[in-house]
Length: 148
Ligand code: DQA
Image 1: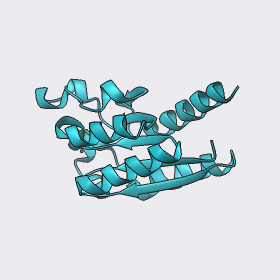
Image 2 (image 1 turned 90 degrees about the vertical axis):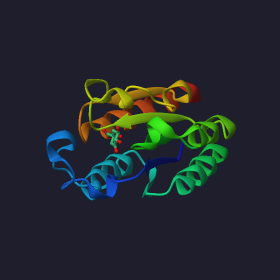
Image 3 (image 1 turned 180 degrees about the vertical axis):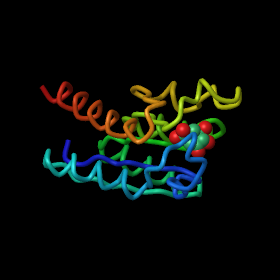
Image 4 (image 1 turned 30 degrees about the horizontal axis):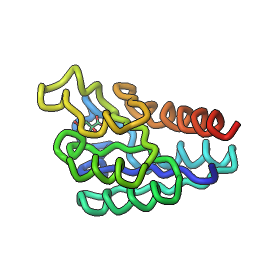
């Protein structure tokens, strides 16, 4: 594994000011900086992106999947609605770790179902910005295991 993708869906550009009681005070830029430092220390490239548009996420998932590069994916509300994103993961054989800042199972019922989880390698949620760092560790461990 030479590169890791971290893809972020709608409204995650607002982190820091968006409902801090749910999502914490870390901005997306600070999460990116933390992941970039962790990747650099391991000789990995990080492709960190955010979009409010479903089609962008689908294209990025396809590209990373077809390149054989793992994805840390916080699809935001598309987690709960997007069959197209699920199909992109499956169709491109993308290796995805699903992440959420909040504990989606402690929230409204419509957040309890994820279209991503059945096609993800694993899911990490409820640890705020730390969810992303834990997902990176999982990515590295899975890649190391599959290479040896
Ligand atoms: C989220 C949880 C989703 O339900 C919500 O729509 C988001 C953020 C999280 O990181 O906790 O936008 O993915």
